[in-house]
Amino acid sequence: MPRNTVAVPPLQAPLLPEELAVAPPDYAALEDRHPAFRRFAAALGNTPLIPLPGPDGGARLLGKCEWENPAGSIKDRVAYALMGDALQRHGNSPLAGLRVVEYSGGNLARALSLLCADLGVTARFVLSSASPRSLLDVLAERGAQVDLVDKELGFLEVVRTALRTPVEEDGWTLLYQHRNPANLLLHEAATGQEIIRQLDGRAPAAWVASIGTGGTLIGVLRALRSAFPGVRAVGVTPEELPYGSPEPPNGKPKYAGSGGMGHGIRQPFVALHDHEIEHYAVSYPQALDGMAEFHRLTGVRIGSSAAANWLTARRIAAALPPSQTVVTVLPDAGTPEEWERLGG
Ligand SMILES: Cc1ncc(COP(=O)(O)O)c(C=O)c1O
Image (cartoon, rainbow, N blue to C red):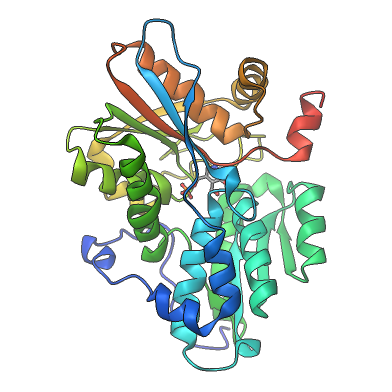
């Protein structure tokens, strides 16, 4: 029996376009009020857009280096956006009374735990039991509460467990990255605008990004389309459970941070733009090989979703002339466990 009346829309409920036509949090005012929020913002974003190894004779590739963010991934931007929304809703009440709960594939929990510890906000994360030791250790050090869900149930059950928390227990603020407009709007206003500036007037042929919530893919797409209406949009998800798959969720290893939800559920941000997205799938072994190949070619460590993006962007670029540009994102540099798997 639910103890309170918090209404949480299910993951699969369609998002209405007008739900995204809202003002983002007033970040400037929030930074004035919370010094820890300002400190996090000062280290956030403005990441480099670097040339990546591309196919011989094909389009050139550019990748945005998101491990340069304060907690090491693109999800630092989303942590800032979701906490901006939560802080704004909390108003002038003392932060000791704010308790946030969220599900994560890893990077968002890492980012939120850093920001919440500095703010003095209680943080609780629902994660898969397959989460790496390195993540669990960091969360414990930062005083975050963790609920683990059996990995065989897939990420969908991780999400649903978090969605039940504010309904079944009083006092928890759910951040809800898959439906919170602040996620997508921040990528549109910051990540996307940074890329437009870095392109310096050169129109990209395609934008390639892995889909977790789809916040990166769609937020940046909306920004790019405002400057370059013809840009193609390419979404990448794991072959073991691609976007929109009718299969039930599964516990198979997959490249990080991305994936279909199973049972035909489509991430709401992406579903809004379904007719505009080309979908590609990358298996976990292909992504691991991609990490190793990228490291061999460049000496730079990228994570498994970055490798999936790079491999896909290279495929797209192979079919385009050298005068064209394909842009992608490198969400993180990989976990110690992934690099151990690759033999250090
Ligand atoms: C490593 C990694 N890659 C890609 C993504 C996808 O990001 P988005 O939620 O914006 O689709 C995530 C999200 O958690 C991630 O952690």
